[in-house]
Image 1 (tube, rainbow, N blue to C red):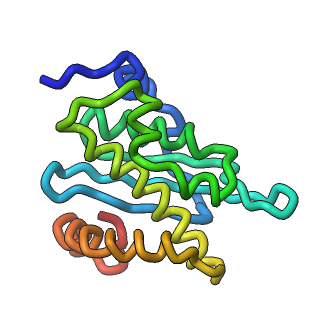
Image 2: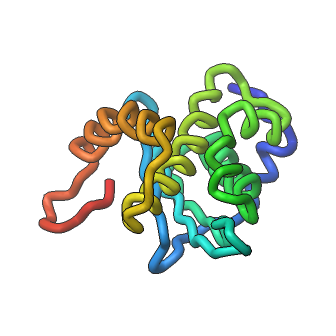
Length: 163
C-alpha cells in the first residue's frame, strides 16, 4: 500500500473546490485507461485589467485517493492565476504541493495538470481565441487517450458527451 503524505490525505479527506461549475467557460476531461481514473475540471474566467484570470475552478474526479488529492491541489494552484500562468502548472508542481506521491501514483499528477490544460484549451476554442502552439500540441497528444476513454465509458444515450 502506498504511503501518502499528510497533504495528500488532507486533500483526499477534505478536497478543495470539489463540484461542478454550471456554465463553465472551459471544461477539461481526461482519464487513464489502465487505472480507470477520470477527471473533469471546470474553469470560470474573468478579466483583470488586460489579463484573463481563473476566477473559479472546480473538479469532479472518479478515482483513487491520489487522483482526488491531485485534482484538489491543482485547483488551489490555478485559482487566481492568469491563463498564461495556469498553463505552466505541471505535474511536478502538483507533486511538490502535495509533499510527494508514491512513484506508482505520479500518473495522477499528470492527469490533474492535463485536465487544467484541457479546460484552458476548451476556453480558447469556445471563444475563438488563438490557441498557443504548445497548448494545441498538448491537446493533440491527449486526444487519442480522451477518445479511448470516451469509447470505453460513453453511455449509449444519444447526446451524452460525458465519460
